[in-house]
Image (tube, rainbow, N blue to C red; front, side, top):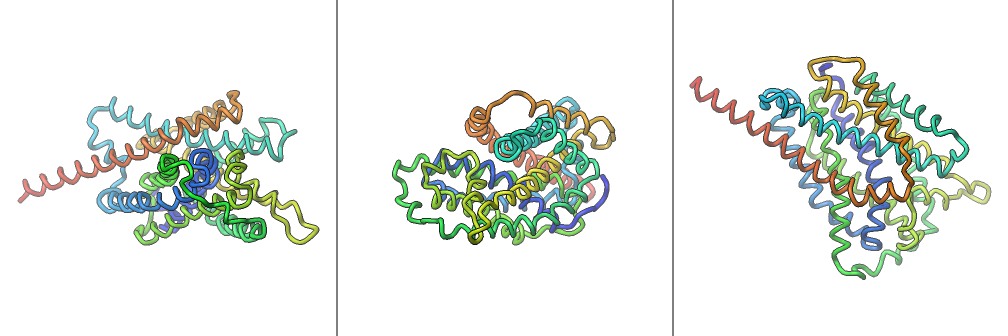
Length: 366
């Protein structure tokens, strides 16, 4: 433990940058292929379970993780080392996969859009090295970069959203429920899979100087929903639901429509900063949690380089974009939702168990 390094505002910014990348880049194509025209409705209705999820996470924070590190609870309550190690492996594998998926998707996007002639090692290894450097410097470094990047990322988002207004036809959002309700409900599950990703904040609470506030977590949650809803409705209203569903990166394609006046017609280069900022924060933060899981109470200089090597090797494994997208849709996001709920239940069990033990100790003393 390095002590209280960050403030609550850093957590809100990390949520917007990391989970925002997930819902803005990875979830939207899946929503469009799953729910088509009704995908925007799925996002709106996913706000209900998401708000409940935020309140549940805040409950865990208030009851346990605010006062005691969740990893210390894990070491106290799991007496069997083998079982404790198994839980660490599962949690570590989840966050390692988060980093791998993010880097792989970033590589596919970069290679297909602006780095066609660039050698793979320049894209993959150089970006991974930058992320490794941030992770090795610690959580405060990641938070500082996130705080500096967010205003620029937000400004670019408003530019593309407002600038494309003449290209939007909101009548394309209707009619709704053309194909029944099943696709609508599937879209809610995919939307929740991305939004529930904010559970990672429970791994960072020991580093926070001041208290998290429920109202600001809810505001952050609303901003994340808007990060899906804005580009999603934009893609449907600009390209139509069927054409948008064929795109792997509809949020990026919206940049290609943007022009300022008659002479500035290619502004999609601005999206590179948006994409790489979110990807950088998400990879660095995920690997920070992985490193923390396996170096708790015992520091080791080889753990972080080893895991980053696993990620780089995983990205190098041949995997075409279409198959990768199908993997995300059919396996990664459904499994991710289950893991996120499982992490919540594990935290709840540990906190309740610790609370019962504290109550028994108090009664014995009385």
